[in-house]
Length: 108
Image 1: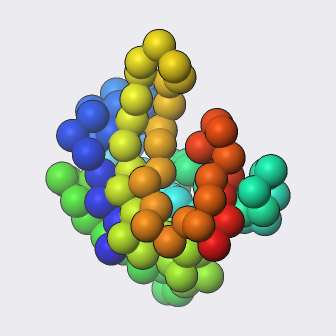
Image 2: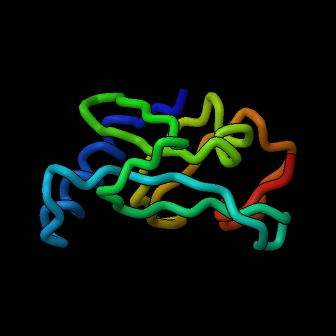
């Protein structure tokens, strides 16, 4: 399962509204090769649910994850920070053995 914090939920709903996405658009979280630690998170809006997607819902936010990425993301919490040391979505991933300084890539 993937969960979202209240702060991430607020930001997702704000971005969805500002960008003109409909209620049919959900959050797609995936993992791709790359970054300084070997794997990178990818986060986007998507209205298409594939038959091979796992669908999670937390705090009224639907999260779509392809089966390959799910192996890396189980138990992850999606957060949002807007502090002085950085701004953006943050993945709190219990499966990551190390992360890069910017938090956009990880290794298992």
